[in-house]
Amino acid sequence: MALNIGIYEVGIISTSLLLILAFIPLYRKEMKHKNYNKVLEASGVYKSFPLVTKTVLTKDTAIYRFELPKENDVLGLPIGQHISVKTTVPDNESPDGFKKVVRAYTPISLDEDCPGYFDLLIKSYELGTVSRMFGELSIGDRINITGPQGFYDYTRNCRNAIGMVAGGTGITPIYQVMRAIFDDVKDKTQIYLVYGSRTEADLFLKNEIDLMVSKRPTQFHVYYLVEQTDRDDWEGGIGYVTREIMEAHLPPPGPKDKVQLLICGPPKMISFTKRTAMSIGFQKGGPVSKMQDQIFVF
Image (cartoon, rainbow, N blue to C red):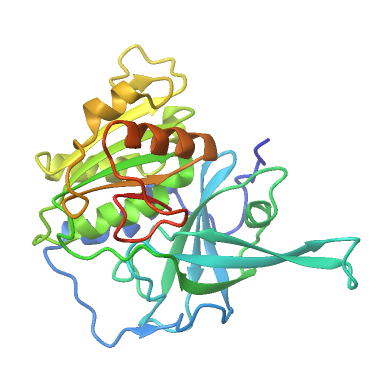
């Protein structure tokens, strides 16, 4: 069950304003900052940062902005990698009555978006641990993070085409890769995204994705999918990801150094998408996805 995170917290700014601020680089031809200071230097070393704004998107999902110590500080995450967030929860079986819980999250902000800050898109669950902690944060509360972590490290034009299948908040690492490609005018990678969620309101970052498509319609291709809608003019799909949808809206499989498929979302969606992708010709990767794999699961 999802957790209602409330909308009356001090420091909340309008959703549209935050999204505009976070997306400013899309309107700049070039945005270079020298003398960045990377605050995450080694995975396993935790640092804490305070919450400065919380922007509610739905009853259980919000964008959380955290402040870094200095104006020229950045996380220093390679594109496609994530941070780990640590918290403690009561545990009667532990000697001190608590246990540590760690979860991985991918920021939706790139380093050059907003030096001095980073943004996380989080959906909170009633039975969650770390996600519930986010929903209960007040302005000024701090989170403990470490990184960089992960095996994906996007570089310009590393593939001719990248297919992407995302579900719900699984859009976050997918979006980060899309943003990096969009912001780099020298990157000609063709992008094919299938993005599904429960309702249209749960298609997070849709406005930002639509902007990419409108600016580069021959490079960015997107198909939206919702489980339910009341709109008669809905132009996307209704239901779940199917083989037919994948064949129609993803690039055809080719050599793995030319075409790649990225997947992030609920476990059942990931399992189906991997299995179906292999059946239509994508090459199976190892049990832990690596950058060179044709099918990469975040």
